Length: 358
Image 1 (tube, rainbow, N blue to C red):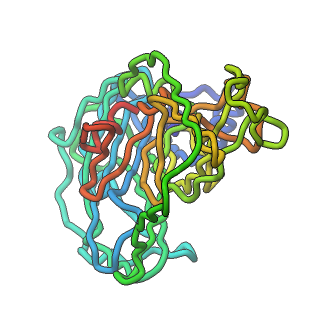
Image 2 (cartoon, helix red, strand yellow):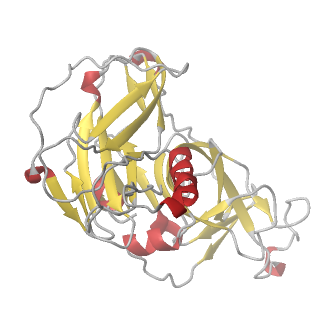
C-alpha cells in the first residue's frame, strides 16, 4: 500500500498556488490529509508502509478466542520513525457484519496521556514491527464476518522527534463462526481392494529456496483452504492419455492435477478472485499414476500458506483456465496448524517467521 505524504504549504509563493491546489486535490483523493500549519517535514517522516493482517484461523466455533497477527513493514527506501504497535493507540482491529456495520467492541476504550519519544521506533527499509492480539474483545455469534485492521498515527502528542503521520489499512479476511456441531469432520475413505495399474516415478534436482527467495520470486502469496481437487488430466486436447502403451509416453506428455483454493487473504499482489487454481504435476488417470518427487500435495479442507507463480511451462501454461504453480515446488507450500503455526515436511515454525520475510 502506498502512503501519501503531508507537505508544508505555508511558504509557497503566490505564483505556485495553482500547482499547490492540484497537489492538495491529488492527496485528498488518495486518502491523505493536508495541514497548512504543519511545520516542515524532516528526515524520519517520509516513507511507505505496508500493513498485513493474518488470523490464526478463519473458521472458529462460537465463543472461541483466536490470535490475530499483525505486521507493519517499511517498504520504502528511507528510514522512518513510527509508533510502536499498540492496540487502540497505533492500530485498531475491526470485525464487520456482512452489511458493513461494525461488531461492537466490548473491552472499553483505554485512556492515555500524550505520547512522548519513547513510543517511537526507527524502522529501516525492509524492517517490520510485529504484534499479536486476539478476538476476545468481540462477541462473534454464528455467522460470517470481515476482519481487517488499520495502523494510524496523528499529531497533538508530546513527541519532539519527526515521525510518520498517516493511516495504513491492512488486507482483510473472512471469518466463519460456526456452532460446534457444524464443524466439518475430515474423513478418510479406504479403498476396497488393491489398485491395479502402472506408477511412473519422476524426479529431478531442486534448487533450494530460502523464505526470502520464495517471497521475492512469487507473483502471489496467499492463505487459503483447499476447496476441491479436480480429476487429473493429460496435456492433450481432450485431457486423456495420448497413448495406450505407457512406454510410448514422451517427456512432453504431462499428467497434471488442478487444485481449487478458497482464498482467505492475499499477502502479496492481491487479486479480485475469491478462488484460485493451483496446478501440480502428476496425478492418476485410474490406470497410470505419475508420482513427481518434491511436488506439492494437497488434501481437502487443508489450510495452506502458498507462494505462487504464473505457470510459464510450455507443456501446461495454455491449458484450461487461468492458474498458478507453487514456487519452488513443495518448498512454496505450508500447512497452517491449529496452534497458529505453519508446518512443512518435518519443520514447524511460527507464522510470524514467514510473515517477516514478505
